[in-house]
Amino acid sequence: MQRGIEALQTQLEAKEIEVTSGAAPSNSRSMARASFSPHLDPEFLKEDAKVVADTVLGAVQAAAKQAKEYNDAEMQKVTSAFQVPASCDFDFRFSSPKRSAMTPAFEKLQKHLKQLPGLGFRSSERIALHLLVEKPEQLPALVEALEEAARTVRRCTRCGNLAEGELCGLCADERRDRAVVCVVEHVPDLVAVERSGAYRGSYHVLHGKLSPIHGSARSN
Image (tube, rainbow, N blue to C red; front, side):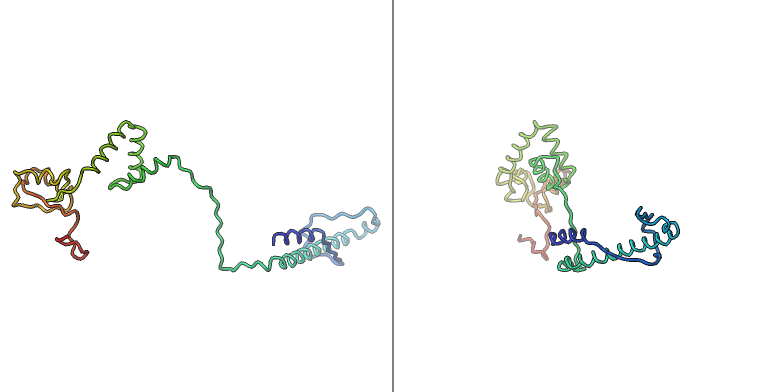
């Protein structure tokens, strides 16, 4: 269709519109002045210059109107085959991909830090910058501690507390009162009770809430 439009524009440029006008136009604001060939009779121009000027202006305006109508009609023939439904809404957006100021490795570290409880985008970014830029010497010890904890820490087989063997330190303590059991939801709850120093019994950590409706009962 583009080639057809270009060919049509070339033809329209060579198209000539001929009009004649014998009366003054009703609106001559589309032209500012008119000039005449020096071959015209000066006496004629002197006597009827206003009539001739109005006639020429009328002819020019009529020619311009006919040329526009002809141009629109010919262009419609070319573009009529390409009809866009009124319900179509084209939204063309061109944008270059945004380039991050940080490295992929930094963004990967921040992404994993942000998944930790209580850490958002800004806090994870600060921690990552602290470890990589401000205190890079702390990284090896931190990585070693994480690997060791992941390798050795597990649940106590008796109470569910954190342990590095079969039993945690509380369950292995023979001085604890086994007849009394404090049931807590999570390990931090056990730590809070134990920090008070007033309880000397044993514990049972649920690692969640009891909810029979959701299939979480005492047997689970």
